[in-house]
Length: 535
Image (cartoon, rainbow, N blue to C red; front, side, top):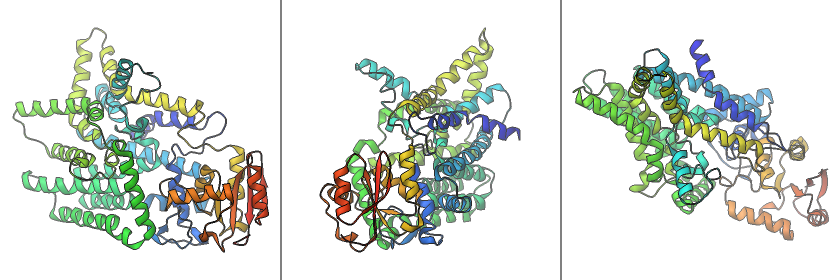
């Protein structure tokens, strides 16, 4: 129980950010701390599409009710079952699951840390705090750069941290997202199981992660496969069994075949999505690639500690332990995957960061850090001043990020998290009416077009910005419909629900002329329905 209490206490920054999210000025938060997070509850609902259940789901952002059921994710399946049984608000359910998964992940992170720093004591405890909430020097470097170039430090304090720090280059920040808490729980659980020689369970973790995420699943399989080959070649004792090497290779082959071959051939819609993602990656350019300046600032401090530990061992003529070989392979594989743009066309390399480069470097250097903290306390007249300064510098990136993120969430008119006011919730509530099951939603509000897939059983013509097939075309068709009344041929024969901004009375009048009738009106929106497929 004591370890679980420590794990819960270490999650205080996560609670802090959620509190800020739910006290957004002007509209309450939903539990979705970022645009893509609602996506996963749309998937959870998709297992129960058309009043049935299937262990595979079809794309929830396809307007076609016959979209093939080709996908499976363990987490979203569990969330879908929990939602169906409890009838809970999707955002609250997602947030609650996230906090439970973060707690379990924190417990596994403590176990992994104890494999490296087994001893008790306050220095080891401060080292654990640094493992959870340590970072690089991205904020300090960004502020220095902005000051030197005449910018505003407060506005651009994460200049070198991709996407305002939401790519989570260090470790603990990942725990604010339900999905990342789950992925890290399985990834770190697999690492701990390998260290404890529970290879069957470790392969099960790899299989679960493979089914959960194309990038992180491949990453763990690559770590396991490369490490097992290295350890079987150079390790003198405790070599992994041959079935573990073969199992990792087999899972990797299935992983690649499913994500890169089967889905494209089995579904035209998925092929379209694949092309959209590739185009978005090309257009984003450097935004998907980790710059060297960012790598130095993000990983330099932990890389220095890791190098110090390894050089010290080399000088003492000590060989690498089994744990160190695993950590080095983990780092090398993750670093190579995150920089694969150097040898091939990039496939969103930033997906391979997420703390998976930072963590093995930290663990390699953790004994040096703990020793440094202890020695600094003994050498100082004020025993805790220098250790606190060391830890303060280590956690400064995350302290600054959480402070700014919470302020932004609480005070900004455009917070990162998704908020819903009473008018928006009323619209989403009306879309849940069983009378409209099977209707196609066309929304002048992109936000409600997206969230309808989360809060209602409806399909929308345009919903998620990246995961709607033919997104650019369908967005243009919606704009043409609301501007001129033009309807795509695919709408013919389908009952429609239209969400119109209340400030656009001319559009509402045109729709009523075309056979629509108002079913909900409030201060912001007008919802109109047409049961037949044509005017």
